[in-house]
Length: 327
Image 1 (cartoon, rainbow, N blue to C red):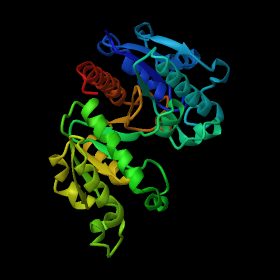
Image 2: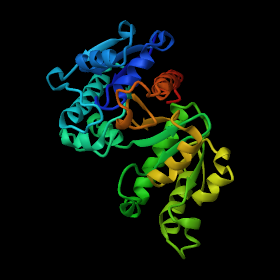
Image 3: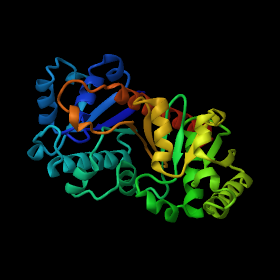
């Protein structure tokens, strides 16, 4: 049976509609999965004309939404585009919770537009967690050369030390361990945990979060029979510079840029954003709305294709583990 995948349109003024259309024109992609796109139909038709595309819309189904608000303003941040992007995600979550679909692939959104549209979330991860009622989730970036989980997603950097409590770290790492085992199929995941402070705090001389929070959590989790082996905390500069991350199945970063800078240097825009801890699979391309090139027919759909393929792999691995009693 083909994996039932919902694709949300993202911000209609960005490159989301373009990369969706280009990806699904490929019969190898559209024919392998059962794909439905949540979008205003008039947005699809607008981009078909704008990009001079021919054929492809017969390759997938459409759930049409918000037709009355669907006015494309290329490259602009608008209340209407934010509402549509949020409503598409909300619709997708509701359908997955009813078990009508197996996975969601989200096209990029603008956080500012999302807020203008009335959806007051920091991003997809927080929105999906709330709408699905999921207690503990984590953002994980996936690529064949590097997987990185995150303790925090988009808070201001000055707030990160306050957020990193023992309870939060333990729950986030547990979600990453479960994702590695159940969705990535890694029976005994090795996880390298990064420090918060430079030089891992220099034994408390330039920060004590490692001593008071991070090390105790690593020790506690290693004592639990969870099948994982945690190491660290490692100073992130040398960890990535000498390729230490290659020794692990997953790296666990404390904040956004600590993990995303090395990840994007390795993966480029071929990485996949995965929200772990949900009852359904959710992936997304590793790039933003790219308002500056919207409608110019130069957006690269390879990230969207990789997100679709990864959603299928994750779902099938999860199902296999459930059937075998490992999940």
